[in-house]
Image (tube, rainbow over all chains, first blue to last red; front, top):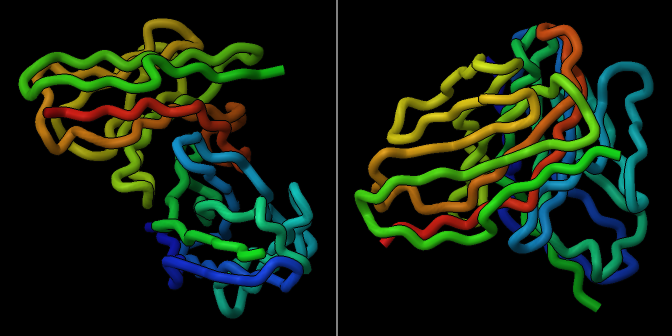
Length: 115
Length: 117
């Protein structure tokens, strides 16, 4: 079985400050990990993914995420937040052996960046 | 480039009425297709997925059904809607590789907001 947890419902940061959105996962094998962003009344947009290799993954809009196998975490980060980054962020995990590439999504974290 | 369409964008239906939501993908072939429901703007619940025409897997037993009559068409249906069927329905696709080693991200449609009264 696979699962993912986003421990924070809400993250508030000031514009220009670094941001972190946390994600921890559980899989029986090796994970594929994803981050998506959702703006109000829209579908999700893919930000970045970890498959294998470097633990630090860079994605769209200046976001990056660090895979930590020992802590089973995949936290999303950005060095300098923008007001336009305010949105709902989802972490997703997929066990490498999962049929049809089914992902399990976290409950989401609302990021608010204040000017 | 690939695009995914969903319609209608919004729908208000009475309890007990039928439902048909449609999703189509352009610019790719043999995609994996998915239907999700999102309640109250939070987590996604996978409802159905399909790896090919006529191949549907149900994740959660419920009042809904899905069909894939064509390679890039995915339909979500119900014979009689319940109040609990209200939500934001999202269709998604991913590139189909080996069914057991698919590391591809999903691409989501714009969603359909369904309100059952």
